[in-house]
Length: 151
Image (cartoon, rainbow, N blue to C red; front, side, top):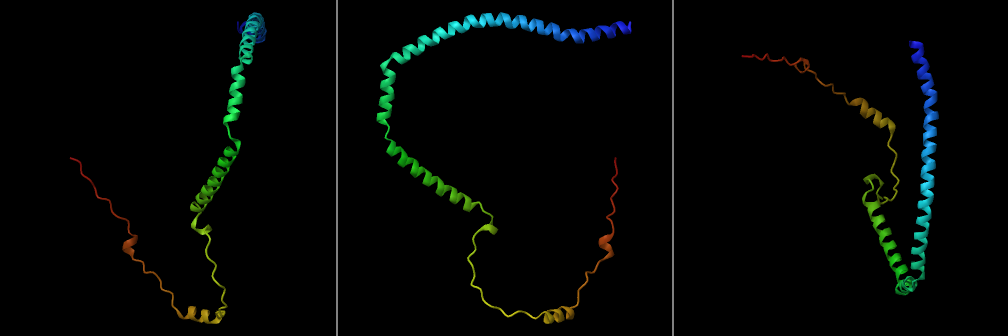
């Protein structure tokens, strides 16, 4: 019984792609013949529409009028102005969002200062006593939890 079921599973695994391919091929053949007919109808309609549009003088007149109405020098001038405004805006934006450390700091004139003597620093540091922090035992004790009573 188990051997028969195993054989069926194996045969089904081999047969599924074969049957599916056969059915898909039949469907593609049916659709391609239908698509060929529809394709021819679409091509005829498209040709009619394109012929009507290109034969009309209105399309040519529209293109000519559009070219005559556009002043390309004025457009270039406006684009130049807008480009300048955009550059200014970006410069202002960048400068306003820079961190304080990156902002330009006016340079101070360099003045020659006499070098401090390291021996003097060492002697003053040695003279100062280091203060230690006083720790209290009260600060280190854990806080006792209060018991709550339920009624």
